[in-house]
Image 1 (tube, helix red, strand yellow):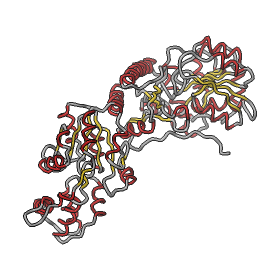
Image 2 (image 1 turned 90 degrees about the vertical axis):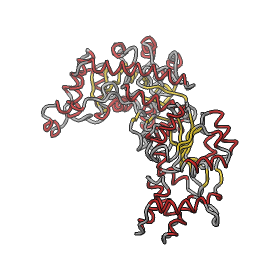
Image 3 (image 1 turned 60 degrees about the vertical axis):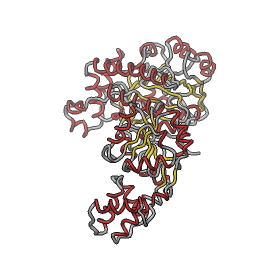
Image 4 (image 1 turned 180 degrees about the vertical axis):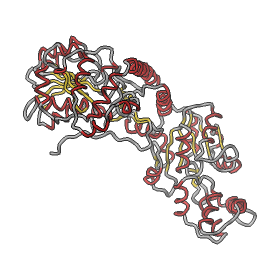
Length: 554
């Protein structure tokens, strides 16, 4: 059997606002500059004595009641190593911080979990389980629910248990700090960290508080040098900063927490009342919601390996107004779009035998053999939303210089046809049924954003029965071509909406949508592999066909 381990949450490379992790405020970058003797700190083995004394001062305890650890995780693991082994029993809440179960399983202990999501703590059930247990692990505010334990319940558990660990990593955001009361109970260890409210997650500075004899016992387990000297020195500098800095950040998070709960409620998304720096929301398809937010650059956390949490996501509060406004926009866009926007070619209309064929035939007219593979290569590279310019580029790549206007004229003659030669546009076919289009239009206004000339776009939409249910049409005459976001923004302006989805079949479509803060949905044009489309573009989802959009709509 493989050893259980923590899996680092997946993060899309396109995420620049990562709210999938519960890190706290960005600590001031200049902290490191204030540390004296950096060279000496790096050269010598770490000494955390000064930090231990500073933490003891912060909590009004003796330094013998403090053990500095490599984050709160290390503090938990030391407690597990000290009190659990094969065949022994631990008790914890479910769902809760996953490292409790990971560490327990790693040492061969049996973990009994008592379910608790919100509301009153299940004190009686936990006490029943704690009687024969070697250790009880509690997290308050709980991760990922944000629920909290009151002092009376903690005291009852401590009276019934041999050894209790209270993980208080998020306590700065809670209404009540039980640290002082817990330390008076005699058998309760308190895990604290500078990763959350203090914003030092990357330094891995945590600590354990408890009775001196238990601190001495637990300090025998784990590494003798838990953190670096540099981390310890920066931590002291952070602790010495005015408390107002932390208080202001905590107040901002608490305000955002209330606002996010209201927004989720307005969107019809249940969430658990939380006293952490996050909310746990029940969203149904957590994979889709996570991917959709990531497509707009915001990372949130899902739990694919935990059955009870499969339909939920955890959203960390950013703690600053600008990022929170962005989070609000993204969530509203994902759950409550006000309009649907579509590219035309390859999305609503199959142009394999028209526009694509016109490129090939125009290139051939000027003596160049261009394949559909050549066209796909240029399309995939981006900046190829103008088929006339794309054709000119293919010619230029083969050493044939032709004026853009001459290329456009030949292309149009082949596409439109003339008295002796039928136009390739007769080969086009719809990719969306008029009835489906009308059904979507009854729910949301529909817009088309295309690089086609207006006359051509109107003609083909009308030919396939789509024009009458199209609320807005933006063409090449109206704005710069994609990937410039201007045509999408113009469509939003004309529709008088802020939140929309955009379906496109090229990198240009997806990049333009993202830049316009519109949710990008990819679709594989006829003859294209959806996997290739997904690899090329940061779309929220890549559809096999445009009709499949209906399965995603709220």
